[in-house]
Length: 154
Image (cartoon, rainbow, N blue to C red; front, top):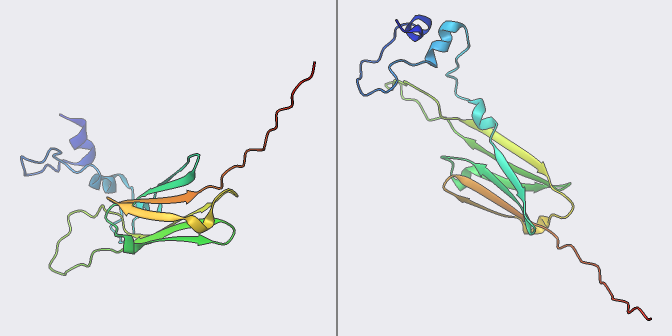
């Protein structure tokens, strides 16, 4: 006998097309772990953002699947702070609906980044494509000092 049915109960799917015959994650309730079906999911609150610096700019990329650009805000605050925020609303429930799984994240998110002195705060650009927000903050050009060659006399 398999160890999995003994630990998680013998809940097998009646569908022969289900590649996972039992729901391991729902079974965490049996082990005493809290399982929440509340509207707000913490995964969305922890939106991941990549920040890379190129020779020309600071580039931020945030994965925001399912959000429209109208649901996202990009703001520059005092003290050189870039703020990315937004909200995904919970789908409205109909009393005749029966939810089998609620896994998509919902709720508000906000990420803030203090930009370095070389950031051109007045030239920030943002675009969104395929659920990925890209914010580009150009950098000031580093002036190369004028170098004058001195001839060596002999």
